[in-house]
Image 1: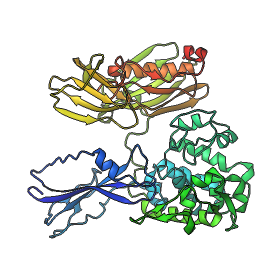
Image 2: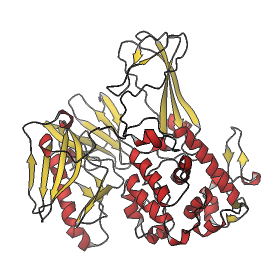
Image 3: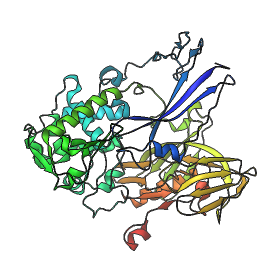
Image 4: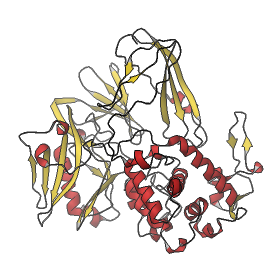
Length: 530
């Protein structure tokens, strides 16, 4: 492809209406055998793509690469090392590359064998797909052609705004269990719904999507829904407006009307012509002052639309059954292992021989007072330039040689690198910080986004709150795990350690991941114990 021309297009994918907005388009000539093309996503691009249903803080993008008037004679090498190269046909126009053959796909891949037709399956993990299918069986939903499992996937897609995130919703932005009208998770659990199944929204928010599915099942298994979950609509009413579940077969039943707040927050169900207006660009606009009702038939239509849309998001890449060293119960002799003891002792065991696939991983094992071993997690590690404590500065100095952005969802915004190794950081609300380069390198591990280990009396749990500072010193992570085990609480919210570059904006005292911030408890006694 050297000296050939390609066209790069970047699209924003709207997670509500699934409309694609073109935000960038440019022709390039490939100047070498290996090419790097960088495109900066600007605020102007972000604003251009804003539309109905788009999250104001984030957008999903995808990139299209088109061969322009190019004769392609090389082969495409799939990611799998044992897969056969895909032959690319020669031609004088844009060439469509066929799906690579997967080669030796393990026969144990149940998703490829049985669950490939699960709607929205491409948005979730193999474990998630398996659990949904099992839950459908447990609830007695129709099994032919995965009908019941597809009902569940459609409902979760609708309620989670197609994200399948256990943390999506209004509750997570300002967690407060006293606020009733705040919702979280796969089916938007409210305060009452969480209480009915013996949990809280705070706990639900700390779980992975796969773990939260257990509470989705508990919700549907409540006695009040016995013999009522006979259709996709009934299943959805059990989530959206439980008292109406028994009316699911009455298409003209009014679930709620414009006197109810639920009416205004569910535009997808406004399907009568007086409930919306068509804008010049063809999209719908929903006025706030409309008097109307939400009927069962409107919900049925919306569910049908979401289900049909999910057919285009079935899983295409199968990873279940493939050993990518994700099984954390591996022999400690092959990997550097931290042994964390109940009495406070921490030992770092370094084997004489480390397996190649574990060369950049650490394992953490907790030993309780009964001398039982608890394998907690395995994390990736790397080294980076050490940072001195930060300093507050009034502005970003000139002369920086590079910039990059920090992950969205925290306070840090942009890093400015200088030739001497210093890094200055700008943020959303705390001004500017400078983190000068220190002496030597420091090791960092990528912390788990959450830990949810519970066995017998041992509880090691945390989740992050409004922070992307998810890296830390590997020794400190061992200490953090040990402290969590001793504390034994399920509501620890970590507000960060450091970033991958060892800076810790806005904190000036947390570079290199030596210290952990956590959200304060409501009482002094609890906080002092922590």
